[in-house]
Image (cartoon, rainbow, N blue to C red; front, side):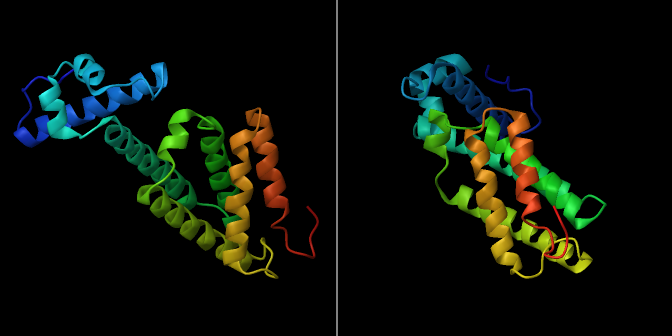
Length: 193
């Protein structure tokens, strides 16, 4: 529903209307699918005219990309918070990889995911994720808890690629086993998994 014009400023009202448009479109896409979604349907559901809707977004795809950018930013923030927690680097890395794997698992194979997992915002988020995973790997190597016979950049790529397999797994238990297997590959050569 369209927010009433009771906010303190026009900018706050515009932000509230934009959020309502994005949230409503995402809900409609999840319920009815992306292919059948129209700007008229979004405008009617939000409670605004089509002309007003077009002032905010040129088409349904642009709305969905705005929603996805918001989702990706929230996921990245969650993962960064986990990476900064106290504790050993190896434990923090496992926690980050498990959270990332669960995100992959929960958003697997949908029509919406196929449409939205392209673009600069995904590339930028992947780079940011790789950066703080690589920092955790380096810290773990320094602690002696992660192998040092392979460069941190390579270990980071291994982790990221291994975790993308969570996309096709049948259960959360399988996701956790994948993370455990991935972490076993990080053991220093002189230690056993």
